[in-house]
Length: 77
Image 1 (cartoon, rainbow, N blue to C red):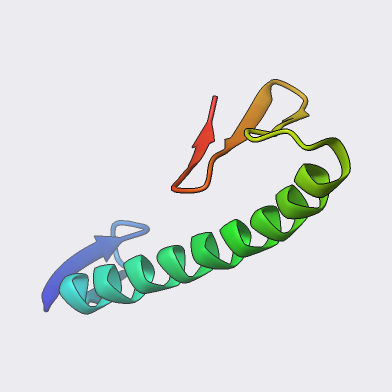
Image 2: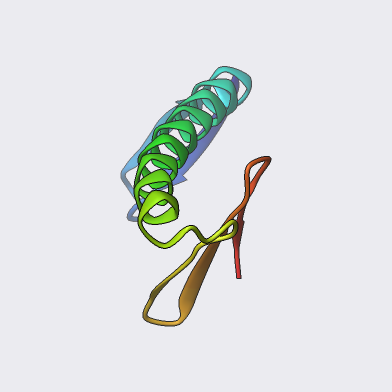
């Protein structure tokens, strides 16, 4: 744990306690969980597009971001 003293004025200070290691692990797990869920959603959509157009590497575009889906990975271009 890390303790940091934060002063908002000259007379008022408070200590903030951080759990850096655990917070990073929780954030990392949450990010990977959300990415897995997103990949599953995109993958399901890609399978539908693949079946419809028989495209082995479908590319989806939304604004300036393109998503290239391959059987082994998903690339943001």
